[in-house]
Length: 412
Image 1 (tube, helix red, strand yellow):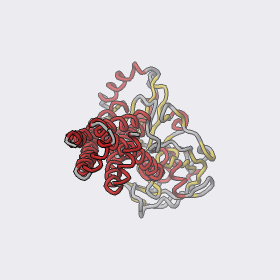
Image 2 (spheres, helix red, strand yellow):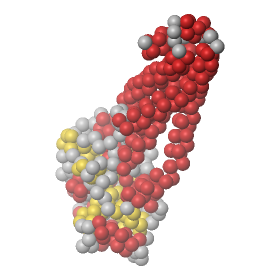
Image 3 (cartoon, rainbow, N blue to C red):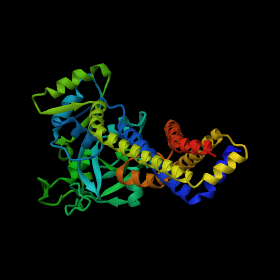
C-alpha cells in the first residue's frame, strides 16, 4: 500500500518528479562514468606491457622514457648505439631482449622497427602473447605487420602495398616511396598501443634510410632493400630496449649497472615504478573530477529535497484526507521517504542504462583513436557502491521534507 500510494502521488506531480528524476540520473551517470573511466584507463595503461623487467633508453626522465617507448606518446630525447645493445645481449642475467626503433609513420600511425623477438617475447595484459589474425611474420626485408586498428581504420588487407613516411606527422612531405612495403600480417586486437602500430624489421628501417642524412633524402636508393648487402642493413642505433631477466632478483643490480654506465648515458626503468609516478602526477586530476561528480550528486539531491519540500505546502488536503482515513503521522513520513527512494531507484536504473549505452557506442572510437580499451560493462562493486550511496543519501535528504510533513500531520 505504501509504495502504491507513493507511486500515485508522484504520478500526480509527474512534471516536477520527471525533472528531478532526470537531474538525479545525470548526476549518477557522471559519478559512474568518472569512476569507471578512471579504473579502465589505469587498467588499459597497465595492460600495455607485461613481463618486461626493464626498459632501457637514452638518459631522460623515467616517465618520458615510459611514455614514448611503451605508449608511443612523445618523442625520444636520443637513441642508443647498437653496440650498446649487443653488449647488453651478452650479459648472463638477461634472458631476452627486444630492441625497438621509432621515428617513421604511416598516415598518422607510428612505425616500430624491431626483431622477431618482439613477436616471441612481448606480452600484454595478463602475460598474453601477440597472435596473428591474418597472415604471418616477416619473410623479406620490406614486409610489414599491422596492428589491428591500423588495418581496420585504413581497410588494409594482407598483400596490400603501402609507403612509409619520414617523421611522425599525419601529413608528411618526406615519403619512403622508393621502398614500398608489403603487408604480410595483421595482429589480433589487444587494446594496447600495439593495435595502432605498424611493425617492421630493424633491417627495413635501415634500408628505407639509405641515401638519407639528417632526415633529408640526398638520393634515391639504387637497390631494392631485399637486394642490399647485410652490412647496409645493420642497425646503427635504436630508440629503446625491452629486457626480460632470468630472475627478478637481479633487476635492481642490472638497473644500477646500466644507469651508472660511462660508455653511454643510459637509463633503465621498471615499467611498474614509472606507472606509479604517472598515477601520482594524475592523482590530483582524478580527485578533482571525483569531487566535481560528488558536488553534482549533492546538487541533484538538494533538488530532490526542494521538490518534496515545495510539494508539502500543496499537499495539505492530501495529508488531511490520509489522516481522516486513519493514517498515522509516521505513515506520512514513510510516504515522503518512499517517494524519494522511488525517484532514486529510477534514477539509478536510468543512469546505468544511459551510461552503458554511451560507453557501448564510444568504446570503439576510444579504442581506434586513443588506444584505450574501455569496457561497456560496469564492475558489480561500483554499481552497488553508487546504488547504495545514492539510496542512502536520498533517504537521508528526504527526512527534511518528511519532518515538515510530520509536523503538518500533527495539526490536522
